[in-house]
Amino acid sequence: MEQSEDQQEALVKTQEDSKSSSRHLPAGAAPVRGEIKKHAVTDDYKTSKRVLGLGINGKVMECFHKVTGRKCALKLLHDSPKARQEVDHHWRASGCPHIVHVLDVYENIHHGKRCLLIIMECMEGGELFSRIQERGDQAFTEKEASEIMRDIGTAIQHLHGMNIAHRDVKPENLLYTSKEKDAVLKLTDFGFAKETTVQNALQTPCYTPYYVAKQLIRLLLKTDPTERMTISQFMNHPWINQSMVVPPTPLHTARVLQEDKDHWDEVKEEMTSALATMRVDYDQVKIKDLKTSNNRLLNKRRKKQKQGGTSSASAGCNNQ
Image (cartoon, rainbow, N blue to C red; front, side):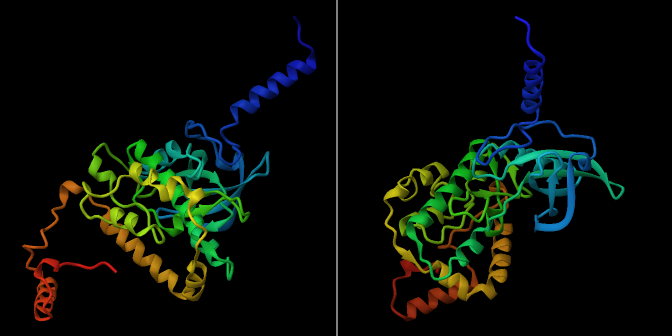
């Protein structure tokens, strides 16, 4: 059967739309990893000087797709094996609904240097902590905390299923898609991500559970990887996978974050430093036995406890 000109036009348009579908994805859709483009990014996108954020390896700028007008985020990296690794990890992982989607990647010359330009969906909802701060007097509940932890856990579980450890999960890297109430929380910035098949290297704590139930915290903070809760166990914990039945207990999060707002930059720096000390391979680290350690601070605590009449069996470090 012959096709009319209108039908042929519609078919061509459908094929063209299909080819570009990986570039213009709706929220929650799984992007398709494509090839790095060699033509100028400015052929497809209009760039601006507005800085949206600072990644560990480069600035994130605002840009707009010339055809659709869609607002996107552009991250510029100087081309190197490490930069290509970051691009590869993020691009492959961005099929997860809780990981920022990579839409396009370009290889261009910028100011005389070969660079990689990553086009990502624009996360207009801001950082997780900022969103909680903006709640003001409106209570932040335990149920909401459970849902947030489930979303973060979903992203990490997706990465671990690909043998990728993010290794830089912190407030600045947890962003919302919009300011709306139903916005999606997503993980970004793969500058420290590492692919490995060594199981122990994937069990470093990769999230900061401020309000998880006490027994869950204890299991997440075990220093011995063999005793620490795995991401699968975390996701199957009732506090996470049954968030619908978690009580709406009011938490003081919004008030605390608002009152201590001036100190959060310092807290973020400390968290960044703490994460840096955790980015080591376990086969290069030997954890000393506290009972046989001759550390001066530990000896001082042991002596103080003996003087106070406490049992030497309880000597050790208290994380408070």
